[in-house]
Image 1 (spheres, rainbow over the protein chains, first blue to last red):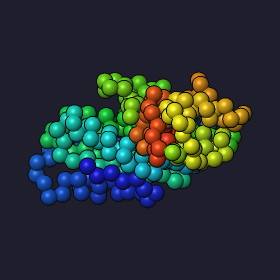
Image 2: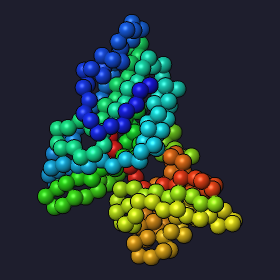
Image 3: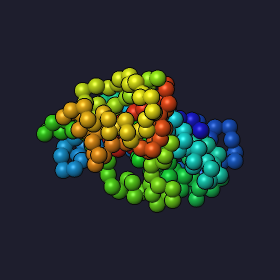
Image 4: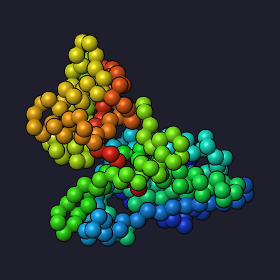
Length: 156
Length: 84
């Protein structure tokens, strides 16, 4: 697995190429890119700032990927999450999973995103015409993580 | 006999502080009792009161209220996460 928590943008094509470079056992790569939207909860969003918990963030992402690797036979996993100030259209998060077949690649990619949403310590603060506001966690995110069977928020 | 406490995001803003050093009492302390102790400090600290949606981590792993704190631990309190 390879995990990066960074301010800089990333190149989706280059990341996918790197995941499969020099190997011929990969039959499928599933990837997800999360972007900043220009609207949320009925308000325009001109920018957002992502805060995170340095140290725990990397550990939490590594734990999530390790759990995916325990559930499915995967060839390689790449996760990138940005922090700092971003504007609509900017990329926030990237998850790519390489496997022998599409089934495990699709499933593991979605699993990693669902768990990341409820376990990785990032917080979004949006700038709107009404002022800045912290984004509230969504009920739907916890439900999405819970459907994988062990709940969205692990204990110690 | 100290632990380091960190606060993040809206909780850090509400409390007006990002971190502190806290001396553990002789009888020890759990995450839940530490949170309850902090909530007693005054109005701002009600952000940690029971019923408020607060999560905790110990040594950078999610932790429930029952987890016992040991000297040198890093405890963090924060709102539910919203990354991705």
